Length: 129
Image (cartoon, rainbow, N blue to C red; front, side, top):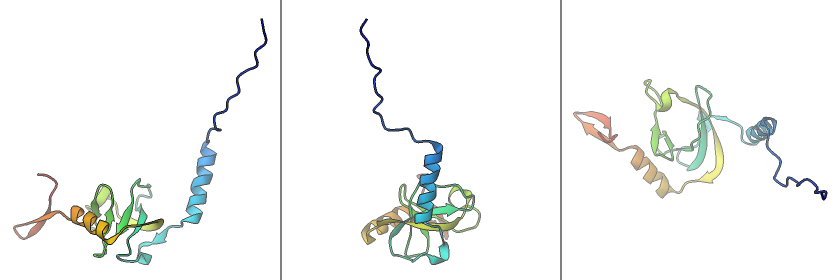
């Protein structure tokens, strides 16, 4: 029998949990969390929000002209109180990404998120009922 050398594994090295943690910590140092009071109303910066349960949300938000946070996809308004805000928790901190939305895109998202009906003097959200 002829000697055959073993095949070389040319795939990229596997990422370990330690590598992922280091990348996440480097990202957190480069993009620190800021309090909500430092957010600029209506500038169109796409942001990440940290909610009161400290669980990361895989979504992006922006602060609208009416001082409410809006989720971009799917369009949803983040409510600020009364115990029924999005996901059952309230936003605490924010950090910007390197993107901005145009005023037209912001208006479109806000219009879709604010599809409410005024029935009998109260606002009822239109959820397809």
